[in-house]
Every structure is written in structure tokens, then in C-alpha cells.
Amino acid sequence: MDFSTLSTLIIPISIGGILSGIIAGLFGVGGGIILVPSIVFTLEFLNYDQSITMHIAVATSLALIIPTAISSSWGHFKKNVVDLNIIRKFFIAIIIGSILGALFAQRISGDGLRILFGIMATFASFNMLQRNQFILGSEMPSSLSFNSLIGFIIGSFSSMVGIGGGALSIPIMNCFSVPQHKATGTASALGLIIAIPSTIVYLLSNTSKYDFPDWSIGMVYLPVFMVFFPLTIIGAQVGVILAHKINGLILRRIFAIFFIGKYLLNLITTNAHRLFIGLVSLIFTLSPIDEKFSSS
Image (cartoon, rainbow, N blue to C red):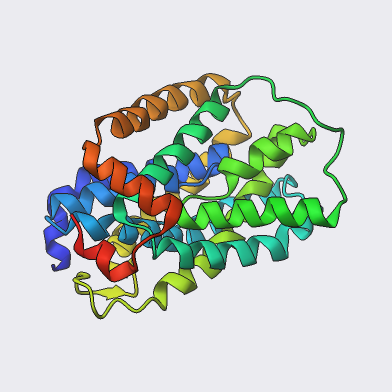
């Protein structure tokens, strides 16, 4: 598939790319919440095998999160809302979790990844609805074991579904009284720490036995990356500006209601046997990657 074929999707791709960047900069939840379904839509519109589109979308989304996270976290850093102390607490565990999560995702079927993504996206959306968070303490814990566990969970789940770590890290930071602007800025930087090792794992994936499209490096699809790349950068800068100029509560709730409805509908309308197979694959990881990629 050549680059010119993507011209038929220029409007939806443009909307998805810019919106993902805005969401990353504005809310810190990671542009993957928009990027993954946008990439899946693009690939399935182009008639790619549905058994591998989710894997491509997750890997390519994480690759795109790297420039998006650099752009948004730098913007937040200049406004002094990136907490380097929190980043230090999570740093090593997030890297380990991201690597293992990306490796594990390659053993999950496409349907299993869809289910996991839907659960994570719905969780993030419900969190966006909340005005007040449940408070567990006045500051982030200093416990090495606690921070390691939390960092590992954030990294592993985020790398499996292709979203930034903000979907998990922001609620956790809010529970320990981290101000929303600082939680958003810090989550943007954590997204970069998640995306880099995850992307490396996906780039090095051996896909020679599978029908991945031309112009792929590992599981990352370069044509989609190149089209979305400038759009997410522009959107991220717009999101950072908006994050420090408006009260985002109403906007957060509009996005949240949309996402909850969309992803719950996707879960409900999933074909029953595919839902069952996906859940079995997700929970037990029963079959190797080549068997999953050959299923429909």
C-alpha cells in the first residue's frame, strides 16, 4: 500500500491526529485514546487483516506518542508543572513495565487487545468525569515498593494498549493531592518514558511470518506514522496552551461521555465468539502469536 492511498482518508486522519495531540496536551491522558481507534479505522478502511490491525495501531500509536509527549511535556516543563521528583520515583519501574507489557501484547490476539483497550479507555473516561478525587494522602508516598508497583502497572498496561500513562498516573497523583495542572504535566513526561522502550520493542518485533503491510518496521507502520506525526505535534502545543488558559471540567466531561458511550458500545456489539476468544486470550494467553494472527 503506497502513501497516495491514504489521501482518501485525509479528513478523518487530520481530525484524529490533531485531536489526539490536543487531548495529550490538554488532559495528559495520552493521545493514544484517539490514535489507536483512528489508526484501526484507517487500516481496516484499507482492508488490512483485522487480526493484526490492533497490534499495528498499538505499536504505531506508541511511536507517535514519542514526539507528542516531547512536545507537550516540554510545553508543560516551561510552565513549571512537571514534577521531576515523581518521575524519579516511577522511572525504573515504568521502563521495566513498558518493556514487559509490549512483549506480552504480542502474545494477545487482536480481539483481546481491543477488549483491554476498551476497558482502559473507559476507565480513563470515567476518571475525566470526576470533579473531586478520592484523597489518600497529602503527598506522594516515599515507599520504594509502592512506587515500583505503581510504576510497573502504569508502564505495562499503557504499553499493551498504546496509550500514554496519564490514564492511570493522573488518578493516582490526584489521590495524593497533586494539583491537576502538575499531574497533567507530569503525566505527559511519563508518557515519553513509557513510549520510548515500548516502541523499541515493537520495532524489533519479528513479523516476517505474518502478513504485515509493506513499509512496516516491526509492528510500526511508517506511512501512518508519517501522516499523523505533524498533526499530533501541532495538536499537542494547542492542548498545552488550552490547559493553562481554561477550566477544562466541562470539556473533560464532554469527551468522557463520548468515549464511554463509544467504547462500551464497542464492547457490547463485539461478536460473541470473538469476545469470548479475546477474553480467553487476554486472561490466559493460551496460543502463540502466529496462531492469533492467523485467526479472524
